[in-house]
Image (cartoon, rainbow, N blue to C red; front, side, top):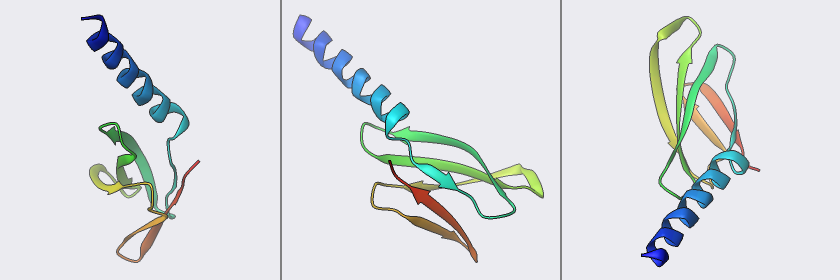
Length: 83
């Protein structure tokens, strides 16, 4: 039982490390705001929620992974910087 407990605590430690130190920096284009970021699983996949400043009650999202450097939404470009 101690071995399983160590594995679970190790996974929780890895997840916390990734959430704090490996979080990507998202630079939204003019007219957009980042509403939230959530990590999927233990990997480097993140779900980014955003809104337009003119319609803050509508939220959309996109998914990024470690190799992503930019995401285009129509003619607008979100820039992603990884630590």
